[in-house]
Structures are given as structure tokens and as C-alpha cells.
Length: 109
Image 1 (tube, rainbow, N blue to C red):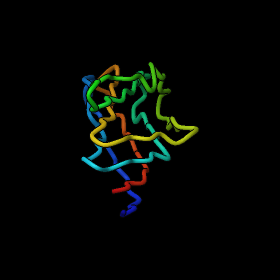
Image 2 (image 1 turned 135 degrees about the horizontal axis):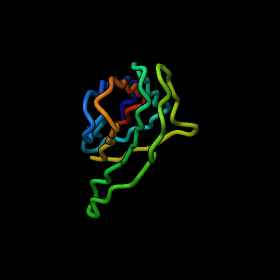
Image 3 (image 1 turned 90 degrees about the vertical axis):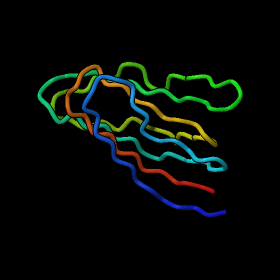
């Protein structure tokens, strides 16, 4: 079993749902931090969902419509978030403003 600490940065430049992190087969991810930065003077909103890729293939809302003040950064997690094999973390912004998402996590294989 290998443990690797990683960081994933994603720039959102559209208002469509975007996959930001997908666990591999036989991988567990423990997310410690998700920081979202609004790099504009506008005030878009931001949502996050988790697609459970097990037999149910269900999508769960992790964060529903978080407002992002102009030129600010927000930490979204207060407790770790666990992703299991083949889960997909997706985010959606309300507009095509420049939003950056930074995810710090532990990958366990």
C-alpha cells in the first residue's frame, strides 16, 4: 500500500460542470483541503458534486451554491472528504469568470 500526498490545481473558465478529481481503480483519496479563489471583481457562485461510480452511479451534492465574493479565497472543507475507487469530484461555476480550485489530498493505493 503506497501513500502519496498530492496537490491538484484546476482553472474553471466556463459555466459547465467540470470533473476536477477522479480516483483510479483500487485507490482511495482523502481530501484535506479544497480552496476556491475568485480572481475577478464579479461574484459568481460555485457548486460541488460527487459521482459515486459504484453500481448505483449516484451523484451527491457536496456543496450547493456557495457565493464567491470578488477577489477572495474560500476554504470549503472543515473535515476530510473521502473518495473511493472510481469516484469523480465535479464542480460547476455560475459563470465563465476565472475561478481556481486547489485540492490537497492523500492518495492511497
